Image (cartoon, rainbow, N blue to C red):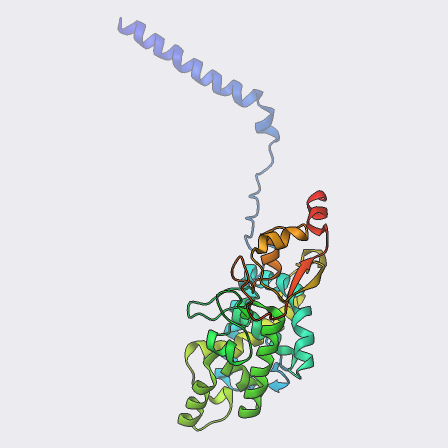
Length: 319
């Protein structure tokens, strides 16, 4: 029995060895296989580089130079350039919206003698969206209710002209001109738009300086002008900061015409139907209309924007 076991073990060993020899001799792959070369690891940043940003030496707001030789000022500028450049989705949305709304804002600024740079103040305030802040500032220029009324905007349950882009831009111009005359610089006028004139006057009196870049301000106002500077540079030179934006990617204004209304309107939905649009489209073009009706007991004249006839139907048909 012991002999049988030993014999079987020997036979098994011979079979295994024979199989290995056969495998080695019969495998052309083993004979011809070249030395394996390790594939290079893919660099996850290929095509996308994160780097420091070169700050323009001639950086200015409304023609007023930024003192970049001051290391503290340079760091604050650098922070806003980094934050706003690398928050790409937000920057891209701002570029798209600017194409739609800047053509409305720019001529009003020019008519009032306000430097073109102030259009970026509206960007900093609201991102060019008709929204209300937690503190109650509303519209693209973020007027508080009392300030809006002070500068001639109608604000009530029916109508809120803080959401009227032309009228609120005109009011912003009057505000900016007033405080530029008082403070002497466009930069301080811009800062007062955020902190309020009283706040800027208080800081100037306590600290005994009259330059925005010399003032120690709260965090929000302290960053405010620097953020406007960054937005101005990035939106003006998108290619320089890595944004590839084609003209067809930008938002465009819908062709429209104006209709005067000097009576009460019992239903804006019915009014919209007269022009072959719906209530939502009417409100989209006239966000200053706050209720589905207009009382207008005084017979005041309002101008309502209406999209060109058939525009939305043609757009739907083209999809």
